Structure formats: structure tokens, C-alpha cells
Length: 84
Ligand SMILES: [Zn+2]
Image (cartoon, rainbow, N blue to C red; front, side):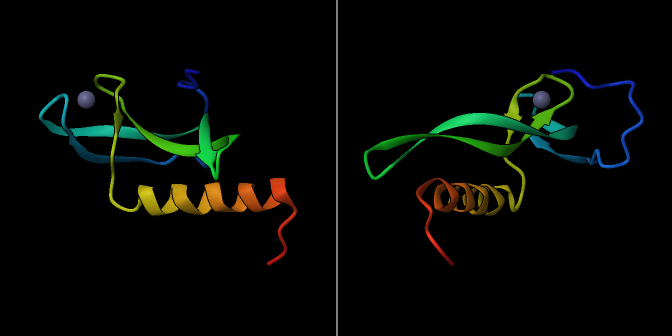
């Protein structure tokens, strides 16, 4: 899961407050697969999370909840063939 060392222009790196480190830390956005329960059914969704580069913990950054909700919604619609 470590993709360091590769020149990736798409990789976004920014600083945000990490509650584990109690300070502003560099974080990276990663795509992971997570299980979601929607209306009693389980789905594996690919969602974006922010990882603290210092401690490796997942941190919450502004807007990531909205982004994740959108990702889950899109994949749910695709899985269930719901048209827009
Ligand atoms: Zn941290």
C-alpha cells in the first residue's frame, strides 16, 4: 500500500490536523475498499480516505465525508442499476 518514491502527479499531499499526533501532519489521499451497509445489504465500496504520513492513522479532513458519501452513492447506484 506504500506508493512512495513513485513520481505520481495525481498524488495529493497536504497538511491537516491529526488527532493522534496532536499536530498538523502531512497526509495522503488513498483509495481503499470498505464495506458499507445500505438498506440491510452489504456492499464493498471503493472510497477515499486521508492517511496521516506521520502515524499512519486515518484522519478526517474537511470535505472528505462529503466526497465519501458521493462515492458510496455512485457505486450504490451502479450496483443496483439505478438511473440518474
Ligand atoms: Zn498522525
